[in-house]
Length: 283
Image (cartoon, rainbow, N blue to C red; front, side, top):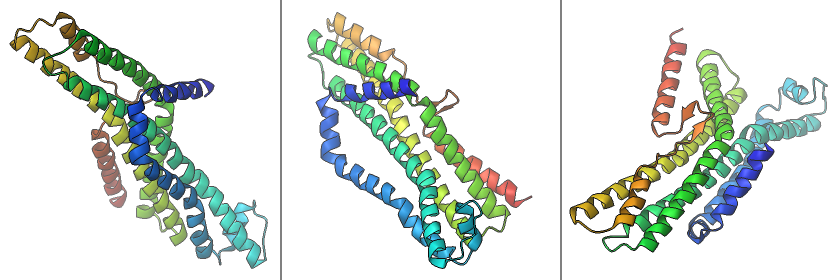
């Protein structure tokens, strides 16, 4: 955990060297990120109050929060329900969403660096200079190294988020289709399932953009190589830089080496959920 913390600090410090990434995030997304964080932080109390109202007459809920100690006073019981619901939603809703948001911001920032690198490469046209090609190549190599470090650093957090999301979705699906759950329990399961869908969708989309941008860089480099060769241009060093970029493998984010985050993961995930739901309904 300490090693991962140092890696994250190193990855964030690397982003600070690129003014493009800071400018884009500050101009377009600071307000959006602040709004999302505010909503996430207020979500536990917004869900705890309706939960306490719905379970007001159910004394066993309040007893559960205080380890089966019976609370006869209705005011105290309501306060315990609000506090218990708030703590529960903080653990089940706020923490997973904040973890997901942090990873998405980091992944999106490195995606922006790769996107800018592809744009710089595309704008070389047919008048390249060795210095400019070397700068682009050095930037790409540095970003690639940090991207691979990002992959290893986020491997365990991605696995935890993925496992938590699938567990919430499968448990909500099994309970609502098979058992006669209480309305309050169904509401809680619905909220957890919605959070699982948001986390799964956000992480898959943000993670899949990194290999997509790297593939675009490889395609751009291959296109420039073909154009140089067709025009018989004398660009030995430039061609060498482009060839090395074209041969670079795309980096796919993964969850502990078991699941690669591609856009096809969404289709297979919801297809599995649909199949699982059909099996439950037929049993």
